[in-house]
Image (cartoon, rainbow, N blue to C red):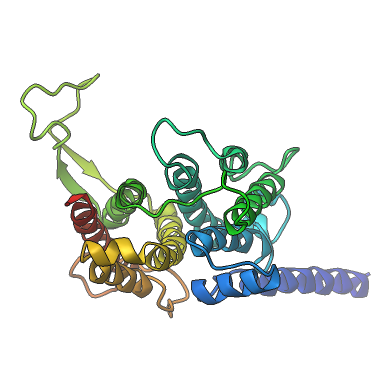
Length: 328
């Protein structure tokens, strides 16, 4: 009897250890890839030219594919162990997914259209909504199946802009188009910066209506409030910021290539390169086995505040870049 119980205990221990090592392997974040080399490889395989917009579209496709094809696949909607017990990589996936959604929307309403009165591209019109399904959807239709459909439509669009005989598929590298997308990225980074900074708790003054004496809001808000990220969510916010920064880093590198002439004309390329450098710093290796949450100037480290510093600087540089692009 004791021997039988010992075998059961050893079996359970083996299963737990196996799940643990699988979870560790699946927790490795995807590495940064070279956007130009990847796009060139895709173009060579399909015997296509690296036309304007090819790198940006290929990068969007590869970032979306990475969500599905990295070790363990897409984990946010898994209902079985070990992924159901993991939260860092699902948070990373959500951050990258949000940036993917923003660029897919900009591709649909800005980059592929010449003017506001122009028609939407058929493939992008179908691709963009596919990425909007809940990130945790696991039943039919699942998040993975919908994202895969979106990727397939993006590939159709990329094939169209690379085909010289298809005039209905275009990518317009203009300053106003780029600026519209950057404004959305500013909002994402600004929100992440605030949430990361709230890891230690902050007393914030309400500035919602600042700068407009006639401004109004629907309901009353206190003039000052205490904002603090829950202890249980600190690591989730950190990894969401890591995922968002990882995706945006690649998108900006692609924009540097496709919008090169526009950036040169506006003397804004160095500003974009500085943003890229700040985002690269967000991808440095985390050597600690857990995300530490020391006080602002305390003895222990606070990884959230370090991340908030890089993201805030990148966001400030994004705002400056947007202003440069708006100038004649």
